[in-house]
Length: 178
View 1 (cartoon, one colour):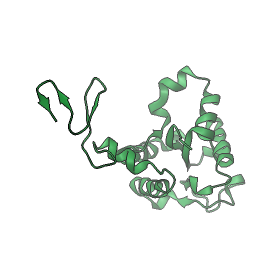
View 2: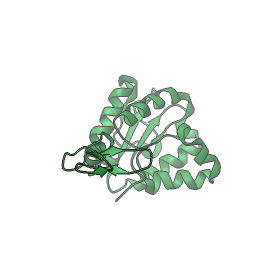
View 3: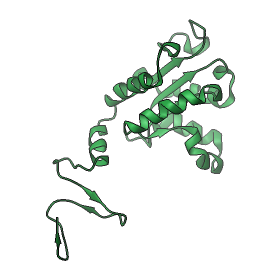
């Protein structure tokens, strides 16, 4: 299944700085991440409940829940958590829960799931775990990364110009040969 986003990050504003650093690492790794602060325009133009439901239900391959003290009480995070749990019921490896609370055992529907102790992890370590796990699910990730770096499947250079033209080897433009 093709997803609009490789990853959707769910968090409460009290740990937004951590979430932003995780997002930055994931974007540098070449992933398409749903991170709410970067999608403000889209969120304002949509019915927020419907958009968040769609992102966490059908539009993202992997869901990353960053659980903080007030996460379980938040209106938006409760929706994101509930939909993420439902959409990954058949494959829990598409769900990564990072616990930033002081609780050893999380309450409610998260209690029986495996999760990481975020207090002992740096943001780059969380991003690395996400990338490692996601590489198993996004079959085209290598091809996508190669294309972003300017290489096609045959190892030939791709040149993009502002006009949207893709040029491969042996192309001619007037007197210019590539």
